[in-house]
Image 1 (cartoon, helix red, strand yellow):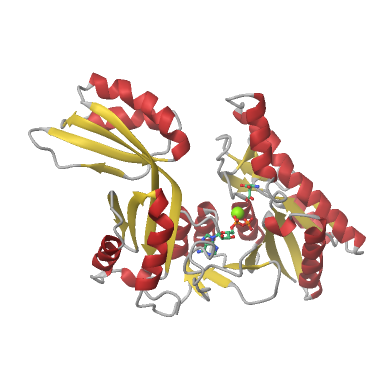
Image 2 (cartoon, rainbow, N blue to C red):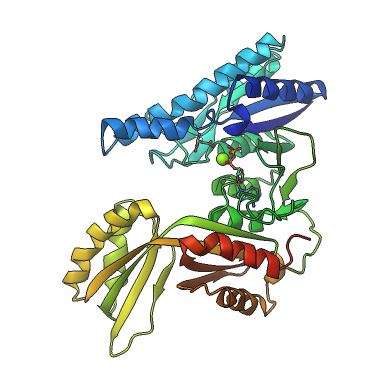
Length: 403
Ligand code: ADP
Ligand code: ASP
Ligand code: MG
């Protein structure tokens, strides 16, 4: 028998009817001759609601307690799915991340999976059970519960697929697959038949919430193909894999990230050690810095700009301001209303012209580019967040992605 791992997202298990719908799909996969391991997200907006609750109690929720609190969301959905299956005369058992043997590091709120001991899961499969694992969570060496970061159930699923030697990880959600852009932003977006791990990793990292970036990374490292499809119908989805791809001589997809803020330190003396003195304390405080740009210096004075998430701006400013003063910089300015818009595609590699088309399209729309960053298969612009949707639509059109 082959093992398949299926993951169902929050919308797909959003109420009792939807949980019954998932149960029927899981039974169909079992009847098709597979051993099935299912990973579930918390129902609907449960995780957001739990976070809001914590902030009603305190401005600074204790990280360890917050992880225990958030992990309960996935416990609710996994137990209900096990009951739904049993009610349909199908043997099933739910397991928490801890019971499933998922060990993580101790970075609360954004833990990484270190290892999986699949013994209990394998035992339950042998007992004839469908095993439902609560996603998004694990346990540290010292027995504290952790969570894997928003969207982390995807990573639970791919990690389990790798550890169980599953033939595929099927990720069921509220869209029919990976599209050329977020269909909620660009209605003409087209579904992709397949996409490479490299392209998907750029898409996920640069704002497309449809896959947790770490899940894509795991899929790539352990060669687990990931099928993204709808939990509401049986139409073919998108396969994320590393096999031979049809060569696409164009942009594959567009993505945007609305959660961008920028801090510029103006008039920094250009000397060794300055960057380290600014970024080391930020990293120590857990502020994740993204794009960093240092201008060419004039008379040994330069400007240093970096981006963080909107939620981290205040914390970053508090850390950076005294350092900037110390090294004799003029001032720190923040812009909290930014977004990233990226075009992504392996077909862009070593091919000129994409950047100029992107920039002239934005210019024609009167959209000002504040920063630009690139990788071999991605070009990203940072622009005002209230222009991001318009930018995505214009770029989708100019690169003819609806076809
Ligand atoms: P789940 O609850 O199943 O984990 P998510 O809400 O995390 O689902 O991810 C699915 C959503 O991702 C879709 O509803 C869609 O709006 C969004 N999305 C963003 N970019 C894309 C894309 N390129 N293709 C498909 N969906 C995308
Ligand atoms: N429930 C968690 C979240 O909302 C994890 C997930 O859905 O993957 O982020
Ligand atoms: Mg998700």
